Image (cartoon, rainbow over all chains, first blue to last red; front, side, top):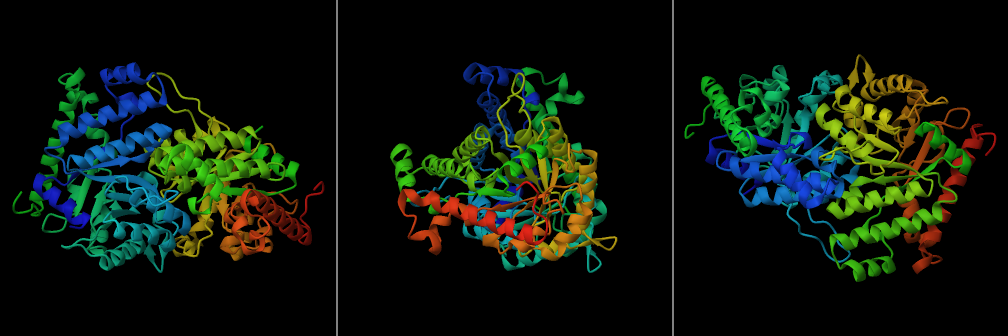
Length: 319
Length: 319
């Protein structure tokens, strides 16, 4: 089964098109986890990285019954050097062993020869002095297409070779996204041109159903464009950041779903993983109860999305 | 002294505007280094990473008298997971202790909140459970501007705070660079618009001399555009990849230098670090003599650049 079909099947099993962003910040980690990490590893990069892992582990355990996929923002881990990378990889392995589809959100990019190395490092088998290393990698990788085709092709090749997937940045969710992404080529905005190129790649690499493992990142906050992008990329699965903390609403993201209710997965990071710090949850979920707030926040987000899907007449039949 | 002024001063000391790319590939490492690494660490990711470090160490030692700066392509290290990151950092620390200016070529990019984490991780002080970590970081970082201002600002902030520099991708050296970088905004190609924005940042963050620590990546292979980009960015120092293996010539890169002979540093990676594998050097530099070929290749490149600078009437007076 191609990885995109596995993703769709997991979404279907849980009736839940949500990917939770495991984007931990040390200041947001509950005290008892930090105290334990300091006791074991001291106030070091390793200690901080270990606190991130234990935070992730507790989240993965409580979210597993309802959430099909997680996304790890590499920036949160890379900050902790070699220890952060070890924790990133350990989290990927744990999440996959629990059945989550895992997205490596690294937005890598470089010219061809270096892109090949990133592609192998994130999706393939690293060359050793003799032979190759077969460590477990994430299922999907995000990439930045700014350098053009010869920088994208190596990622597509490694994804195809190893049954992995990509989410290519087409239109990001940040306020400044328009600044360069709306430059035009032949009268079309750059994000539409890239969308056309991603659709072509998707057609060249079809999955079992409608979608390819070559997907797109389309921000939930750019609602005028989502409809156009959905039309331009009928065979492309959308990863949608921007819901919640960044201001995207359920009604906005529903545009990205096709009429059968599939075709997109919506990310939330801070809104779920740090729910226990929000005023509405803070008092009821102190100390070790913190993760119950994340479960509740994830359920509320699911209800919100399913309500909007239903209103739009797009709720999948068996959900 | 601002980091850009230190870079210029190092270039001046050596009369050599070259940055050597420490972009090691395991298949290109001499056998005796690989054998030693396997003996010490086995045929593992750690063993391969250690071979990269020993290769780098020998290069740094032999190139130190003539080369002012090195650039580490992150993709070459990230491939080896936590061990690769440890070797990346160990190489940065060694190179800085020897007096090299060090460029971290990671092309990082993300929306604002994640860009802040990348910026802190590559240029600043990582937050621990209590306080911050003060590990030594590289002097300059390359970043990809595709996501717009709010993704660039956090890097500028951390660079300013820690006396580090940036090289922002303006026009890359790969064949597909034109595909998206020539999209237009108000009739101007995107790379010129980005150039204007980088020049504005440079003016806001001036160094002691003409240049800012906010620099630009301008590919040596795009010669028609280099002249325009130099005019658009008079206060911007250029990092120029693409010389040698990628096809850029000395006459092409000389356009990027201002009339006084400053304003750019030219990168060569494979052409120098793997010189011993080239037909012209192969027979004369077997076994442990390999690095002599790198020294010779670096000297030949320096001669080539200085000859072209002289022909263009741009050779600095005291070189």
